[in-house]
Image 1: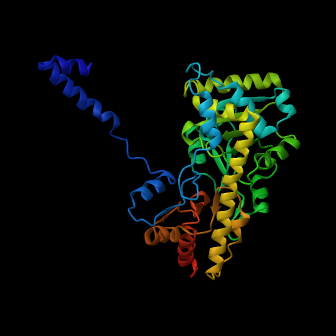
Image 2: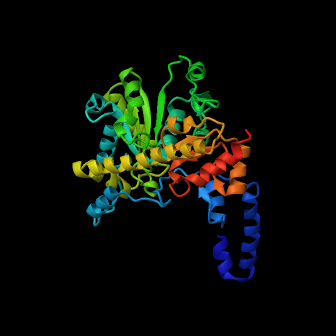
Image 3: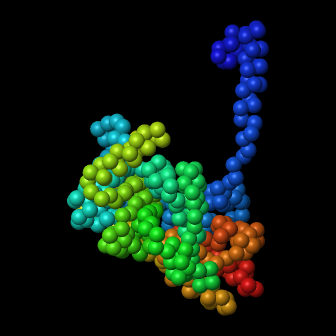
Length: 389
């Protein structure tokens, strides 16, 4: 109405201005949102003109030149799906083929649970979307429940379950002094309470280079008879960051229950995004559905994982060569893309201010950002800020 009146001119135009003034009060209570602790690191890095700057904050794979990577298997899959028949909507549950192949990765190629149709599964908007969909499902059907989030964890986990209005509690698993597992405290926090285990598996294949080996914890829970849920993502292990391809699965009592759960997951997706994207799902199903392409993917996953493992060894070696009085064994004892370095927030600030090295203030280092070209510089800087600790 305000736009139409403004176009009419005269008195109508004045009415439009008054209307706009009144409407501006709608958003006067809105304050700028705090910067994301991870994305804010990248923003600061990009704004820094220093040629020696290093970004070890972002959770995205980089090659040894610090450049983003598109896997060969992905390029070949894209060539094969070029000119795809149509761009019609996928069903609310997503690509059936992609979901089927994804379940095999998590539950096992010959899983009886898949054969018995006991798993409710839908395509989701990568791992974040899968977590959020499950959080909404939890709120709707178990409103009396709460989520136990590990300390430390990915910061967005708290945002996801908070915005789904699911009460949160935390449990500890990390021992700050040893930079390793604190099993006793973890068991004390969790206790035996009939929990439902939910896995956010965003890096399958990145820990060891073998997706089967990296799914071991899930298989143990299944062998022990637990009902579980899994959020899976292809952002990291296929490099499909911008395609937002993932899957949410929930293990159920039987096929009838799985059908009901899947229908409700789809109903939750409907008012949120309606249908998941097509292109990324085609890439994944093409790669996993072709033996040769899948073999190539497994080879490339191992190359990425081996590079990260190699950078762990190099960083630890450089720190020890500098004569650091601290133990850096945790760098090679830990696995995956990230390393909890043990650096304090104040030490991280010094790394940024004095050496132009960017990471989150909890001292978490993305090993994918470490290269043969910057590992010595990084080690020297870490040594400088920790040698008096």
